[in-house]
Length: 99
Image 1: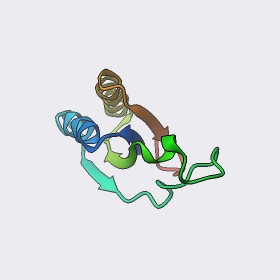
Image 2: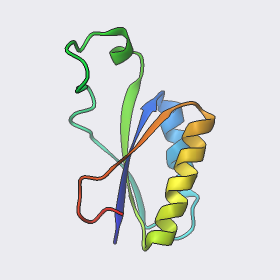
Image 3: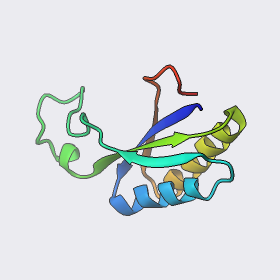
């Protein structure tokens, strides 16, 4: 099954909204929050204590879908939900099974 990994940067309640919206999509096989070992590290920052580094949190979600059509729906719902809450959303593509 293809896997979509996404990161939401914002408050916990925003992440929960995105996760709940994805849970509501028919045929989604699995939705799971995963630990992101790099969530506290930024590549563009030489200091981990800059004000924009500590202002919000990053949460990672892994979604297993049966096919590309459902994957497209997951992406659209995640973008819409995060966008209405003004949160940053990133689709991570580091696994060969991801779509």
